[in-house]
Length: 333
Image (tube, rainbow, N blue to C red; front, side, top):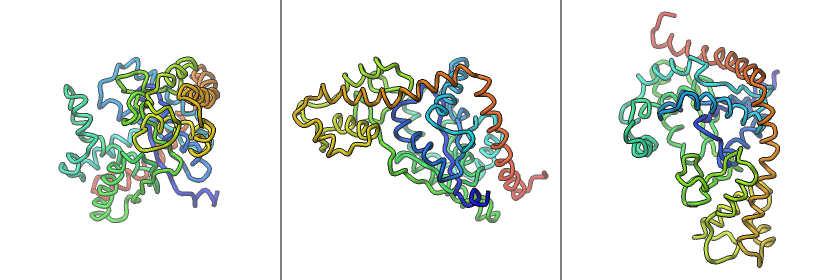
């Protein structure tokens, strides 16, 4: 137990806003699994964040349970980590309001994701879309996280979290730990199979651009066979070969082979052979995850047992931080 205390705390969350993608898995979730032995990991399904975009209630409930079962299937171990559902832990919404009063309007208006999402959802530019970085800051600060694994596109969220925490600490003393964002070394950046200049996304307008964790093998193969490449017909990693570079990155991530080895193995072979090999390697990587997912999703009682237990622990930890912050502000507790 003494050793447990010395481990740094890692916090990370994922939105259950639809099917989890191959990009989510290779870019983040695989690292979440690896980090469980080295850190005290606290993971969340960020369902409060999901409603900045209109959701169908029935589908949202299904997505939450699907995502929970999927992450367990990927290897999140409830004996090693705390893996809870954000909306079940009321301290998140409360901390978000508290920190909103210590966040400047100008800081939020500079967030690039607000600009991007406003353009995408022009008919629903709601206040939550503007203030959700504060909720995200609260998510992290409630657990006194040392580190937050992030993609390169989320650095801004860590910066605003640190700014809010430093401002609050400057006024009231050492309440929050200042978290560090870090980009895990072996997180693959997976791009769309149809537009390799863009990140793979479940909201891709072209369904063939995105591979989902639960796609059947024949669907995965079809998507890889349709992947955009170029006219050179040579498997090599080079500038201007975005499609081939993306396929090589995916193949390297699932097989562990270096780019040099891949170039050697496919020397003189066409893109057809290469696309088939990538598709087959992805199918084999996802097969055990899909089998475990099917076991978990068919046992709703077990899923509930896992998240209720984690919700309780998360509430206990986060209540300590929220109580300390409220006391400093002057609330009568």
